[in-house]
Image (cartoon, rainbow, N blue to C red):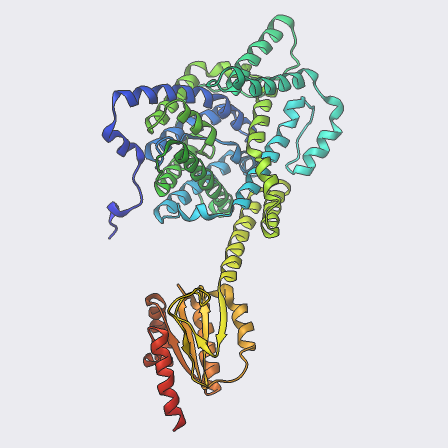
Amino acid sequence: MINFSQLPFRPALFSSLKNYNKELFVKDLMAGIIVGIVALPLAIAFGIASGVTPEKGIITAIVAGFIASFFGGCNVQISGPTGAFIVIVYGIVQNFGISGLAIATFIAGILLILMGVFKFGTIIRFIPYPIIVGFTSGIALTIFTTQIKDLFGLQLASVPESFIGKWIEYFKAIDTVNLWALGTGILSILIIVYTPKFFKKIPGSLVAIVLITVICYILRHYFGITAIETIGDRFQINAQLPQPQGLGLTFEKINMLFSAGITIAILGAIESLLSATVADGVTGQKHDSNTELIGQGIANVVVPLFGGIPATGAIARTMTNINNGGRTPVSGLIHAGVLTLILLFLGNLSRHIPMACLAGVLVIVSYNMSEWRTFKALLKTPKADIAVLLTTFLLTVIFDLTIAIEIGLLLAVIMFVRRVSNVTNISIIKEKVFTTNNPDVKSDDTGISLPEGVEVYEIDGPFFFGIANKFDEQMKIIGDKPLIRIIRMRKVPFMDSTGLHNLEILYKHCRKEKIHVILSGVNGQVREMLDRSGLSDMIGKENICSNIHDAVNKARADLEELKY
């Protein structure tokens, strides 16, 4: 029977309310209002760039923002649609439609919940840094590429899905550049860049959208300049909260979209935990990674029921929340409430926002995501890390994020196995064995002299499938045949089935050569595995010694018997 009290689910909201007071509420209220306003242009931009309508981006920020703050494990995390999902969401919408995206998001939500329940929150943070940088830099370049059409106002009947195909079409349509759109986009970028120099707490993206929208409205309605396309020219704004709808789940659709769901789940987990970790460093608090995954999972299960897109923790909005005083999940709940009020009462005004202005916002988002300085620095690291970085980056850009994540995780496993394998050493000792870890360090340990006919075969490090080749190579150069071989395992923290198989091969090889085998320094976990497999009975439990002293004494006694 499941003991629910032991489940890794402790929402930060409930614990933070125990000592909640008026002072904290005032701070959360101000932070929530500001973050809600900041989140509006980003939600619209991410929604449009993802291939859906602008209000779906806002709805995602509302629903996911509320649920993730309510159930999540971080006090200050703000969740919603993010730039990282643009590439994968756009691809799913193009290939499977909005209904396919809803199913993929739902699958991702279930997977995120399972990751949290099975305590994968800490494991997922061990993904190598070059892979994460390769993902984010690749996504940033892809987002930038998708915005070229609107930034330059290019006249294209359709835009290819592939990265290279997009740029080919862009160059073909270079003579259709709309200077009004280009000027709008460039002015938006300049406003976003220079706003922080004058207004520290007001985000440049908000200033750009408000100011540029007003200017373009005046140009259109008072000067007759209609060359600048707006959201209303392309989309019909539905400024109301949608009713929940079914997903139409079938086994066929789940099977078809399961891979996309895995991609969304892994990307969402990585970004949410990275954002929460950054927040911890600023606030001095510590988030619960498994609860955060469950909270994000619940949000992504519910969001598609309202027509939303995938959501995750957003670093930019989370930092805005922290910088404006937010310290509990209440600010995240308020941010969702502010967005709801904006959608219901001001949503129709969003149709006047120029598309080139949103493109400018996303150009800055892609630049901030690119981490080009970090990318450049990683190019000076070991060749293996450079190869992983470039492989992940190129796969993300040239192919798609699903393939990049699958290959990236495979590379992560290979890197881990390779590095652990390099830690494990196998050596043969024939004259003197030391009991200290380092015989070069001065100590009272003068070593134990080995009797003639006895050698020690020492395994230093994990004994698992990753060192199978190293083991086989060492077996081929064993050299002279001793009478007794002591297999010293004091530095073997764990052993898998491949290591067990290799040990059995070694024992059978020794028995065939009439070499007596003694094991030394076997820890409890490895001993239990030997017992379960029956290998300890095969070797003889009397030949499994707790330390090297007992093993050498046993070898001396056995030598006497062998003489007779």
